[in-house]
Amino acid sequence: EAGVAQSPRYKIIEKRQSVAFWCNPISGHATLYWYQQILGQGPKLLIQFQNNGVVDDSQLPKDRFSAERLKGVDSTLKIQPAKLEDSAVYLCASSDPGQGNSYEQYFGPGTRLTVT
Amino acid sequence: QQQVKQSPQSLIVQKGGIPIINCAYENTAFDYFPWYQQFPGKGPALLIAIRPDVSEKKEGRFTISFNKSAKQFSLHIMDSQPGDSATYFCAASGGTGGFKTIFGAGTRLFVKA
Image 1 (cartoon, rainbow over the protein chains, first blue to last red):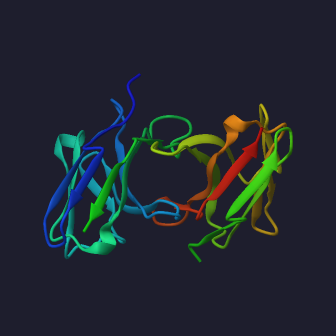
Image 2 (image 1 turned 30 degrees about the vertical axis):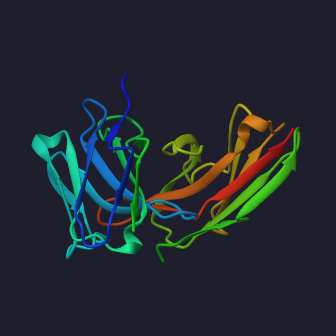
């Protein structure tokens, strides 16, 4: 079974520029999550999708961050314009609510964003 | 009410030692408590998890102890090995209005050979 795929793995941009991250979850996983992990901290949920609908985006800075999930499969997370404090690793995870343990999340390798 | 507090921030043990990492939560609606292991450059991976109806769970060298009344849980790593050197995150999932997962801040473990 292929894992969660993310690209790019690394990105360096200047502040006020825009950036987009892509995630392909495990096949059949209906739930997809985007987390922000700042160095030295635990992952913080930005947005959670169930199929292509948003379940929770309460911690997404909506003035600059946006996310969509295309046809309930792939997802993109965009930042526009970026700020210095957006420097972090952006993790995508997926889970299968149809399985017995629907809470188990499978994480991708993340995208390390540096904003200069 | 949504915080998960994790300690210590870092831990160094000798090979064969038993590192213990502690977590505390506030929201009694949480009903799933996983531990994730993260190596540099990788995403977190589920290590072991427990639900509040049991007080202890073992999987290989990893044990979770759970104290529901104190709202605390801990991870014990038996016979620790240098390959266990990683960052460990506790988390709490569940809650009202659809489930959330809240992560602790992480513990960086180093096991000396």
